[in-house]
Image 1: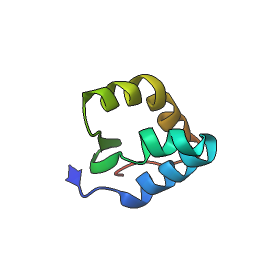
Image 2: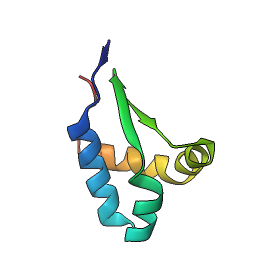
Image 3: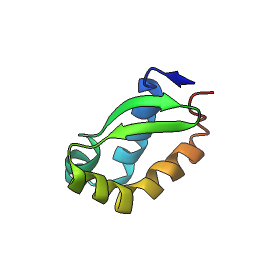
Length: 77
């Protein structure tokens, strides 16, 4: 089942990331990301281009998952 983007969930995650990263790093890499959809327990995040995608996947995906778990967020349930 697909639902509209969980803006609240994504904003909570972004706020937690912002608290852990230097401002410039957050502004460069995380702020431009958009939550485009939520399905089951997945957030669909849109990156501006493939370089962003690769950087987010390699450097920030573990942090996003960790924060989601720490906040006790269940997505789309």
